[in-house]
Length: 207
Image (cartoon, rainbow, N blue to C red; front, side):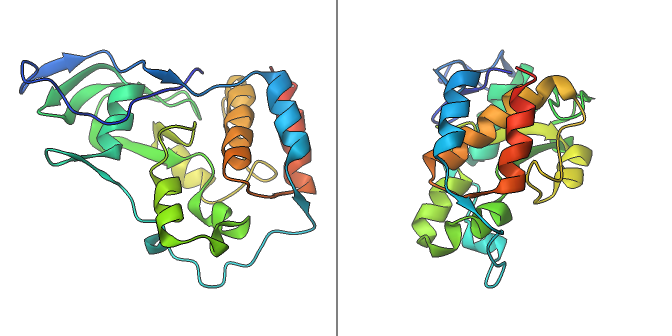
């Protein structure tokens, strides 16, 4: 899957209530398998994951406001959906295909916006030492392939697991998922375990 991002969900004045969008396509955030393998090779490998001591989701403030009573979640729903309908810049309808399990969702309220690298996983692999401002930037990161619209059931299944213990049900998504995971960890200088690195290496074989 090629993810695209937008800095916000501001809608021009002529696109008022009931307007329709086919999604934004401004900045691509994908890489390629060769580049992903190179990035993976440069990640710091640790013997075990860090402690969860002191963790809470509140230490990763999200979702950032993007104006007009809208937030980052609206931006992701608009970006990842098709035939998206807006009220102001709030997403009120559309269709989303969850890359994790292939589910088709037509109610935006039933779409989860997942952190590809979960907040708790980030905490265990380096974010515990960040400032709150850094964690806020991470939790609202639209510049890297860190946020994706998926089905609620697949998001719950994933939880805070890394690829050594959880992979998307859709094996056709493994290549992109591994690339996205690697890009995010590389960009934010997070660590990986040996088992996590091995799982990512295997997933890249699907590319």
